[in-house]
Length: 260
Ligand code: NDP
Image 1 (spheres, rainbow, N blue to C red):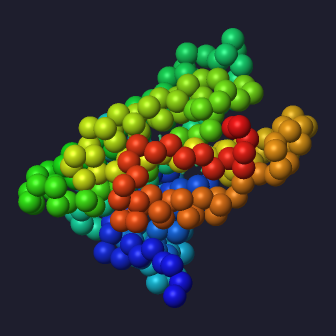
Image 2: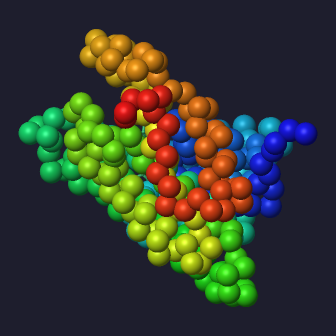
C-alpha cells in the first residue's frame, strides 16, 4: 500500500501565494486535499492560481494581504475564516530580500526586510494562533492537536551568505521566532516548525542566476545546482499534517548541503 498524507477537511492559509514557493505550496496543499486561502498583494496572480487549483479539482479562495499592514493582516485572517472556516494550517511564506553589503544597506532596506520578514510573519502567526488557541480552549484540555504553523525561514538564517547580511539577520529572527512560538503554543495543540531552503530558483532571485556573479555562485554550490520549488513538497505536507504530531520547534534545512 502506498504511503499517503491526506489533508482533506483542513483549511490552509498561504501568505505570498502569488509567486515562487508560495505559488507551489498552495497547489501542493490543495492536491493533498486542503482548502487553501491564497493571499498576497497581487490579486490578479492569486486569481490565476485559484483558477488553476479549481481546474485541478481543488478548493481555493483569494484574500488580499499586505503583511506590512497590521489592519490588512487582521482583515485577511478574519475574511479567510469567514469564507473557508477555521484555519488549521498557516504557511508563513511572504518575504523579501535585498542583496546588499552591510556597509551599503540603507535603513529603509533594513526596515523593509524586517517589517515584511519578521514583523509581518509574527503578526500573521499571532493572529492565526489566537484563533487556534481559542478553539483549543473550547474542547477537552489536551485533545485539540490541529494547529500547524510553518515558517519559511532560510539557510541564510543559519549561515551568513554573500551580500545577504540583513536578510540573514531577518531569517535568523524567524528561526528563533519559530522556537519561541513552539514553546509557548505547543500546549494548545499548535505545532510550529521552520523550513530553511537553500537557493531555489524563483522570482525573488531568477534574474540573479543569469548574471556573471550568479553563475559564479552556482558553481560554488555543493552540487552546482539550484533547488526547485517542488523540492520542498514533501517537507511542507509533512509539517502540515498529523503525521508530524511530535515535531514542534524543528528547524529543517533543505539546502542541498550548502549550509554544512
Ligand atoms: P517570490 O519573490 O517569488 O515570492 C515572495 C512572495 O511574498 C510573493 O508572493 C509576494 O506576494 C509575497 N510578499 C512580499 N511582500 C509581501 C507583503 N508586504 N505582503 C504580502 N505578501 C508579500 O520569492 P520566493 O518564493 O523565493 O520566497 C518565498 C519565501 O521563501 C520568502 O520568505 C523567502 O525569503 C524564502 N526563501 C526563498 C529562497 C529562494 O532561494 N527562493 C531561499 C530561502 C528562503 P505579493 O507581491 O503579491 O504581495
